[in-house]
Each structure stands twice: as C-alpha cells, then as structure tokens.
Image 1 (cartoon, one colour):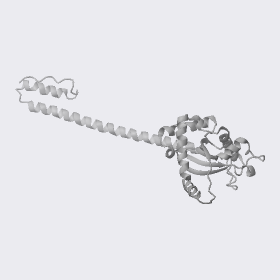
Image 2: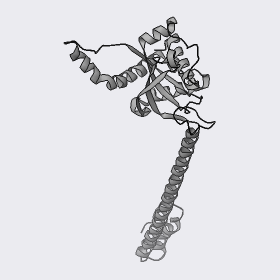
Image 3: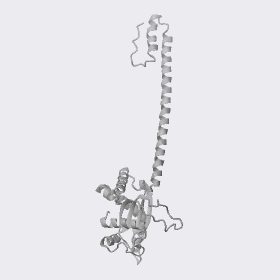
Image 4: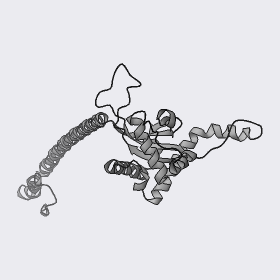
Length: 274
C-alpha cells in the first residue's frame, strides 16, 4: 500500500488528526485498521457537521431576535414621532383640498373655507420622488414662514404636482361638467367659471373655536393643524383682490383665524402662485 497524501490545509483543524490517523495507520498495522480509521474520520466529520448545524441554528436565532428588536425600536420611534406631531398639531400624512371665498368678507369680516376632500398624501402623489419633493417643499415653507409651496419646486416638478392636483380636483367636480354639458341644449342656471389653485403649508396659530363651543372656551393651545393644502379660489375674486376691489374690511376681521386666511388669500392673489 502506498501512503496516502497528507491532508492539506483545506480540511478544518478539528478533523485533521483523524484524517492523518487514517493515512498512517494502514502502513503500520498491515492495512487491517482501514475501516476503523475511516470510521473515525467519518465520525469526526459528523461531529463537525453537527457543531456547524447547532452553530448555524444559534446564529439564526440571534439574527431573528435582533431583527425583532430592531422592529420594536422602529415602532416605538414611529409612535413617539406620531405623538409629537399630534401635540404640535402637525399632520403631513394627509392633504386637504379646500375652497376659499370672500363672500362674507365685507359684511362679516370672514373668509369662508369649504373642504372638498381629505386624502392620504401617498394616495395623491403615488410616485415616491414627487412625494419626497412635496414634503421637502412643505418643510421649507414652514422654515421660511411663506405658506406658498410652489416657489420651492423646480419648474418640471411643479408641472407634475399641479397636474396631479388638477386630476384629483376635477374628479370631485366631474358630475357637474356632465350636467353643464347637457344644460347647454336648453335654458338653465348652469354656468362655467374659472378657478385657480395652489399648494400651501401653514398653521393657523390664532384661536377661533369660541364660536363653535361658546360655553367651553378653548385653552391656550388652540390652533389649527399644520398640513399641506390645495387651496382653490375663484379667478375673478383673485383679480378683484389684486385690483383692490376686494380688500380688508374697515371694521376688521371676524377673528384671528379669518385674518390668517385673508393673508393666504391675498398672498395667493398678489403673487399668483399658480
């Protein structure tokens, strides 16, 4: 019998002695212990395989526990952030579309606001890139104190954002377009008008719930919600504000919240942030 080639460093250190014994013993004892020697080598391999199996099992358990811990920490951080935003009266998870009107501005000093819809912002801006740009513009509006968001977007992004908002607003008014289209054939009271809109982000910090709950006055923290809004206004009203036909009433505004709405409306008309 020829001596077996020495076992190279490719084998793990734990089984090298057993394999070396299997290579040397046959020469010393006439070849009889072949089976026992290779059995010892196989046993060493089995023991090593079991060790590796338990090691892999233990590592897998540690990885799962670590992943669960990370998920738990992330959920806690998310809940803490949600609570902080709630106490700050801030909500960037939704977008509100509202209509501003100066119908009662001169007589009552009120700028009326009517909500058209409130949707999840991810439902309106489904593209992650555009959604990130909108949220970034909202944050810049908060930092600068300028409610007009569109000035913080590039011309290309601005077009896509406004086009997306147009589709969602038009979906609210689509049935009226059908009625108007049919009403043209006969005499009716339906008529078409132009409205402009823009995106704003501001928080009305003035108190204004006293009229709604007169017997339960609001506390010092009474303020509006900081959120992203699609603000609509009649084109004719915007032109009248720009021309000075519609202005702040001499008797003052109804309260601080209506004064804040008037400032947004005036800013919308002066700069025409379309």
